[in-house]
Image (cartoon, rainbow, N blue to C red; front, side, top):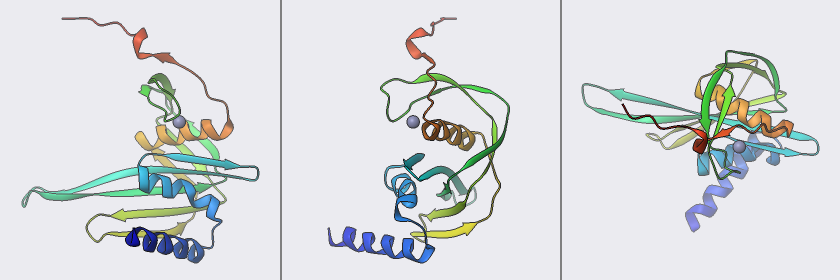
Length: 169
Ligand SMILES: [Zn+2]
């Protein structure tokens, strides 16, 4: 409990140092605390956090660690997309997985971009501001596209798993 409180204080201090609205930082906190991608919208602000995981594994000593990189985009704007990928997705707000189409690559610009890199080895979360535009590919692009849909408030609904057929060979 005491440790959690002190973590919250560190969080507040980091947000102050970054000079960012506390609301805009919320998707990063959610992504770090609960995992996955998050978006958040108020009357005058949209924020999106997308998480990428990078595992560094040393074959010789058979040890490694998984870095987590959360990219926060404040008031993001989609510049372009490339490709179309069919996939099943599970949205946190929905009960069932849905078949959707996502771009393979997305390019985005944003008013403010913060990178949060969590290193499980040093137990540090390094925050830094970067410039756009940014490119995302694969899983990160799917996540960005999913969250942008939430921000735009126009969620398409796809087909469900129970509409699939089994085929035994
Ligand atoms: Zn969702």
